[in-house]
Length: 142
Image (cartoon, rainbow, N blue to C red; front, side, top):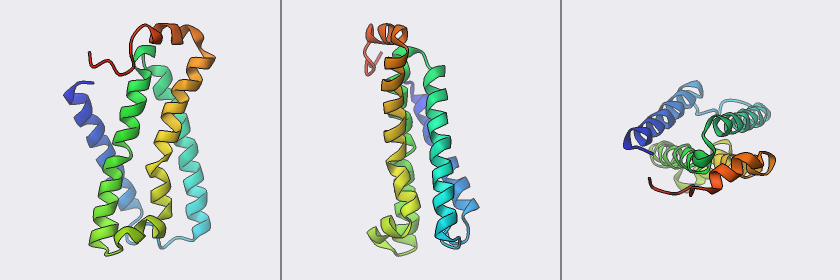
C-alpha cells in the first residue's frame, strides 16, 4: 500500500472512533442498559462481517490478504490507543477499562477474526481467484 493509503485508513479509523465517541456521549455508552449494548454489539459485528465480504470481493485477488491485514490493523490498534487514552488515562480507569467497556474491547479482536478468515474462506469458495492470488505473495512489498 502507498503511504497515502495508510494515511487514508488511519484517518478513516480515527473518524470512525470520533463518531462512535460522539454517539456514545456523555458516558461512552455506559448510560445504556447492558442488553442494548449487547444487541448493538451483535449488530455491529454482523455489519463488520458484511463489510469484510464486500471489501474482499471488491479487491483484486492478489491484494485481498494484504488489505485484510491492514484494515484489521488500522481498525484495531489506533482505536485501542484512543480508547486507552480516553478511558484508561483521561477517565482514570487504567487497564480496568478493558472490562468496564467490554463492548469496546471485543472490537479490538473482531476485525482480525473477520477480515483475514474471510479472505481464506473466499479462496476456498472461489478457487480461480486463489490461483491468481497464489501467483503473487500477499505480503509482497511491491
